[in-house]
Image (tube, rainbow over all chains, first blue to last red; front, top):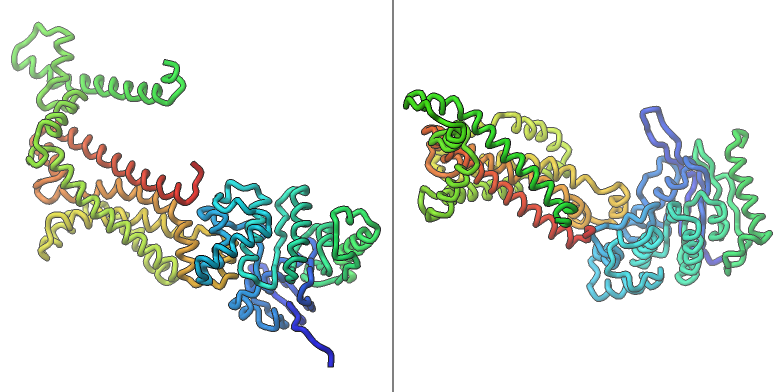
Length: 263
Length: 293
């Protein structure tokens, strides 16, 4: 018998229909998906394709109306109660009245962790995102990129094996975004965690991922799943190699196909 | 001189000076008929303009007292009179201030309590909010005597009934502000707490309460000022025993306009002081919470 590992995320025939004033809207329909532990998976697609909704279903922030989904072999609600994942939002969503250190400590305080343990973890995670020394600053004293790194540290602080990221760098300029992408890859290699990453940038998706899931709107569905052939070690200039461009091309084709109505 | 022109001092001084000038002009104008009457009765006919103006500004019971008359009266009743004498404005101000503070504290507590109840229960929100709004449409002058009379009948008199009128007025801005403040966290921040599996109490104390504090202080500034109004109104139907309201009432009984204006100025000084104190508490708290400068 083959050794089987529990997938980090497994969805089957997953669907979610919102009831609105203009009638039902299918945000997700017939989504089949398996993500193994340790993968870096990007969800890409135009706005309205349900990629954020899918991430929110995984996080138990939305309830699916059809199909099944398991996170670490559990229901999303059970996984949330076990704090199985960290979630990074589009905006840093830091609490402005808390210092950097106390923002990172927030999930640990909610877990009622001891003081010494909290201090140790805050220091460790802030070092991971290269923000050591900024503990006592307030959020408004940091740049947008630094704020988002604090929110990543906060999601890492409680050692979840799954990191859900919803366009975390969408509001940042390209130079900062490049640096944070490279940092995120380092972080992923260090921690060997599973990352599910929502983006609408093709280069970002191709640069980061081991697997790219292309989605299309009306109804939100998966149109292509691309396994990346790029090596795990990825300097920034890998983005000019033919290999990279080939994958980017396939993503673009997938996005274009999603927009035609013959699919 | 340079500093005076660049800073905010000069404009403030000019406005103040203009107000005083307008006040003096108004005093002369409003007190003229009585002064002419007086001259006629006493058959004084050789009055000069200077004498006329001086006389209009120094009547015993002027329609509008001049600023220096009010200042002299306040000096006499605040500085030159012992604070425990019934003739001291400080004594009366303290009577009013004590019931203002008690009413303000109770009103703020009641307001916060109601806001928390409204936040956590849709039924309370729907059923209570119309009553809360209706309570403020009733003129306080109409309901204050009834509160005093009813409470007197059950044996409560003095400080408590007046404080309750202050409570009645001051809880309202606190409810409205705190409901808004407790609902002010962004959806993202609430989602974040949800992903941490935070309890309702944790979400309240770690997110909603700190988010609501700026709203609370803004509401408390309004509340403390109207709590003072409530205390003064509460003193009117008590038969003018003590307090700034009593001074206003007895002043109007006996036509002592100078006394009325002194009491009014004392009341506004107390109100300004209270609002300033709330503002100070606000600055200290928000600075500790990392607000800019």
